[in-house]
Image 1 (cartoon, rainbow, N blue to C red):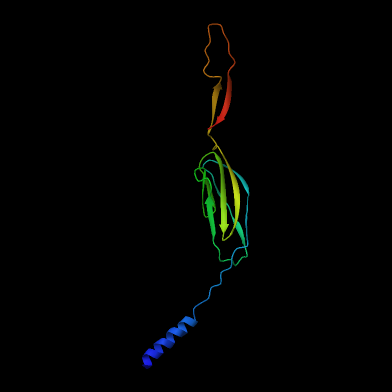
Image 2: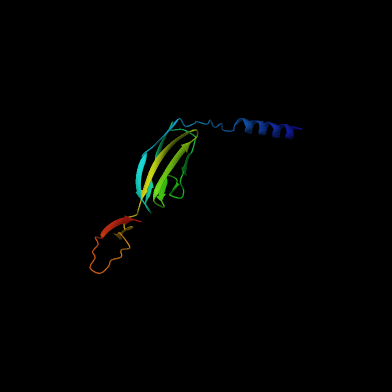
Length: 134
């Protein structure tokens, strides 16, 4: 009986010593850049400031256009031309960065306009070289 009573008292004491963790919700989140232009293939690191500093909420990242840009732990990778929105969320608060993705350097090419051109003997045509971003 004494052993059972001692075991019960030990368990009760252990329960009383459990650490109590108080959750601290995030009240605001601010991203370091709200509008960014990137080239295909580039990466960029976004950072956020979350208040209060002792919040227990973790920052979660999401790309709303994952076919154009991905994000992992704030690191954005531009995949193809277009637009993307990157969302950082902590608890119930969130912020967004808009991304414009342009052609990668060296992806420009020249085309001749108008094309095709059919000329008869002794006819002339004015052709123009136009740079296109692919």
